[in-house]
Amino acid sequence: MAQSADGVEVQKPVVAIICGTRPEIIKLAPVYHALQTAGWADVQWIHTGQHADMAEHMLQCFDVTPTHRFTRSGTTLEQFSADCRAQLDAASAAQHWDMAVVQGDTESAFLGALSSFYRRIPVAHVEAGLRTHNLSRPFPEEGLRQMISRITTIHFPPTKRASDALAAEGIDAAKVLLTGNTVVDAQHWASSKHNIKRRIEGRGHILVTVHRREHWGSDMDDIFHAVADIAGLHPSMEILFPVHLNPVVQNSARRILANVGNVRLMAPLDYLAMQQALADAVLLLTDSGGLQEEAPTFGVPVLVLREETERPEAVEAGCALIVGPRRDVIVRETERLLHDDIAYRRMQQTGNPYGDGFAGQRISDALARHLGNPPDANAALVPQALAA
Image 1 (cartoon, one colour):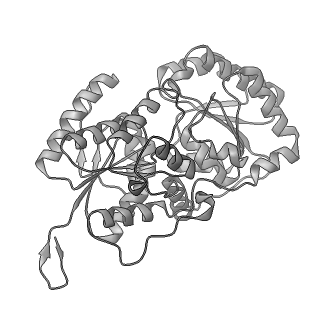
Image 2 (spheres, rainbow, N blue to C red):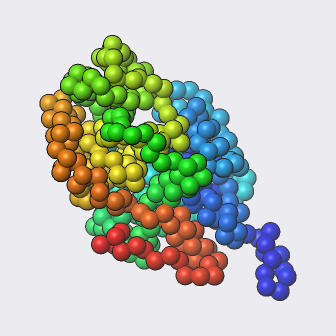
Image 3 (cartoon, rainbow, N blue to C red):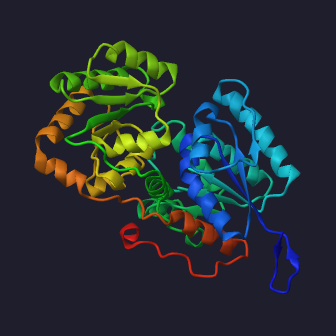
């Protein structure tokens, strides 16, 4: 309960933050803490358990204590979806939510938005408007985020391109606020609290991550053969490869790379270890969306192992390059950057086009205004770099 100016107790609006995967925790923690600091809302963190094994450390890392923890049964996405919907319905029926906040394009985000929509609870979508316009790439994320947009009340696109995508789909501009990406907030917080900075001399390692479902099969084999080729061309350079836990990825990586001496296959890194690995890297090869956003903070050039990306801002800014999953292209572009100092420095020095570290505060202020609790001061202005 809160008190009004005349001392009367007032019920705080309930804001439910719904998430279940590691990337969602990273990107919603800044919103959670901004809301907690502002104090006008009863903030509830709903952990769906979608990534149960990978999420617990992230919750601890970002000082988040879930209000509700769902139990996941079964291993398929279909089983998770059915169970999660039932638990979401029960949680929102037990205590009315005034706003549901979801992030990105996961099954948890879609189910949180859909369950709230059915109960006529307003939905706020963090990182709205990302598009490839290809329902197969990435799958199923592109379809999920498009569907979330149709039932969202307030859209928080991270960049002008994402905002423009929403406008092109007929979304009312009054329901859209350009915020920057909360992933940059999370990096600033972690770097400050845990003193993350470059700790090695020289060029550093090449960092590799691969996990996309659309790459399973021959494309993934091509990527891993390219990594082996690069390792052979640079036997004194370590290639750090945290291997995703999915058996498809594990089996392919170990079959092709287990006996390559300077490729270090390792378990997935926790968030802080991954940030340190980024800071110490000379180059990132990845199909991850989140790492495309994070690497520019440390000045690490990115080769995107996908045919298209819903995060083209880094490509347009010059700090990332799309190379796809083709073996020869990956090797050629890696060699170019490792041997052409001018091209490398050009990619290294562009800065981060995704945000300034204040996205969480902008989102908290916007939610306060929507729910009738305007902040004392005006919301932080959208940085010029994002609005350009």
